Length: 339
Image (cartoon, rainbow, N blue to C red; front, top):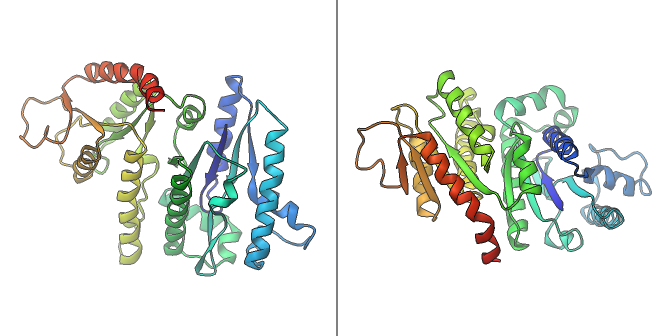
């Protein structure tokens, strides 16, 4: 199994990748991480021994392409020489450098590597802020928050194009996501995939505790994508900067939709009578793209619009869980039939 992992530079995605490696080891799996930039620097030593991750992108684009291709050859040789070992290739498909994009990889670069799927790791606004405080490479590149958001969007967009052309999936994974989610994508890919929707903005601690308890039940039978691990909250902090606020807000919507698209179904958990435009939008998007939508709604009074964009409403969590278990049991056979 080969997974190509992308993110903006300095996003510390090695944190979730390392947790997945540790989890795999505890289950007797041999999973390793290869850093593409490190391999590129090793190849580039013959050209200039002084190159660093900060100066690598100053090379002529044609030279950079040759270095990338040679690094991928080395990685592919290593993979072939270690049968039985799975790999996460930690790299980039694109960079934002000196106020503009640099395309690092395209479809042809993956002819040998042939990843089983891609992941794009997304940091939240708080994590983005930490990059500016801790990462010298971002300071040296003179990138600001707006450009970081654009780069993050570009990474998703480019990886989507490449993965789609290869007939593979690009999964958006939050930096703070449960490592079990990525582990199951690698080792239990036939598990049913669920996007959990809830009234995030108005949720209090009690609601989050109940939701966490419910999600823990789902985790035992499904791969669960949680929007709170991906959402960018920059618009809350940058209210005096309309451009950043609007960009981050738009990205939040698109990324939630992306996670719905990469799921088999959507489960909405509404434990309180609070209106949520996000939940409404998500269930309409899921419903209109052919996803099953289940709604937990423990109230007897509701509008005719409440059940319109869902397949079934449940007033008891256990009933909904039982239905998901049934669908989860059927999913491996359905995937085999589809293939």
